[in-house]
Length: 340
Image (cartoon, rainbow, N blue to C red; front, side, top):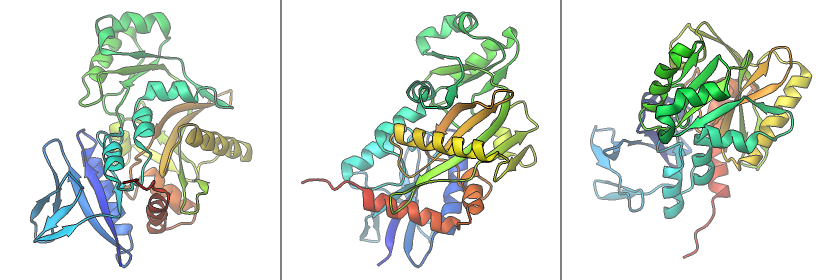
């Protein structure tokens, strides 16, 4: 009997467009002889599945089932490929925990925590050989006085970004004080990101992104790193998703010592944050010091053919379909059993 997969996509933010592309790629890679895949779209208004005949079927939210022509479809596991809220911030994970449906991502607490960049930095900052840039976390109550707070505590240039956003939406690099207010307003007003803003001092160096996952046997596997070189001011939304603006080198050109150190740091981050499934850690290697600076962790990384994780999976010598199968089997085998 095939394993029934609810492939979760869509979402409440501007990242929904990327989620649809990621989910389509994952579905194309999964073994159709082994898995029966149902793409489930989640929006602010509705949760639904579209049949091959084009009929939209609403999800029964009581038990996350579908009624297709009188046949009730339930699922063995949810494969969450929903970037941003509610798939990356713990909301869906909490719901799935309550109904007892296994899922492929980090749990509700870790997802909610890691969606908050400022809180995450506070937890990982004492990991050996990992550094974090000086920063301030601004809440809505700070908005009127935000430029003054930033200028009192930090030195230009700065990165200004929504504290709970993704895909660099609402993010700016600020090199002059006169540009700070516009950048702060842009970050505060980014949709569905919690009206919190993180402002960090700029770190000069090479930028990398590196994935890690736990396989069906429970082993932690660190993927090869990707170096990001962009013609843009920084790795913003356009740099991530417009062809030709960024060069991505996988595997990255790192020394043996740098590879070993990065691998150890990423494993420590994964364990410290109690991650599950696959995650991706972004970091800088500072020019002149060889120090690794933490940028952020992404618990639902992009999964288009050009995305970092698929690149790294291929560099490891693994097929994407086998990689996704590992995540599915690990989620099913490690799922807690509800006591009734």
